Image 1 (tube, one colour):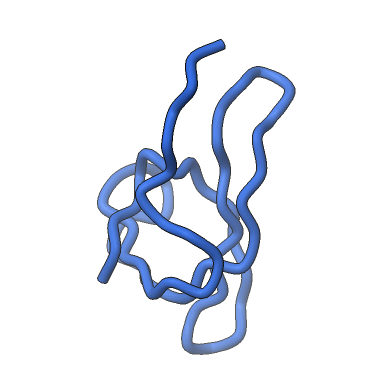
Image 2 (tube, rainbow, N blue to C red; image 1 turned 90 degrees about the horizontal axis):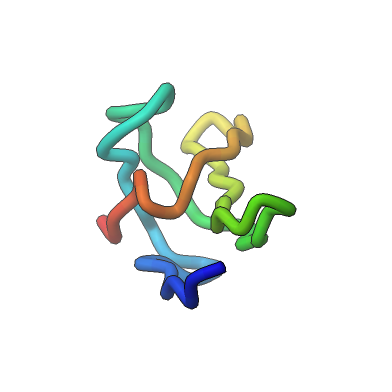
Length: 61
């Protein structure tokens, strides 16, 4: 397992730049490290819809 540092923190505005949710944006609500070692984030968009994505797919907005 590598010691990756997430590009975002809870409460940050972010934009998804890769993956299934590419082009969406919102506020980071939850950071988590999965069993496989990947850092995931839960993002709430402007319509109050939540989705999960990998932290490596987001950048601060």
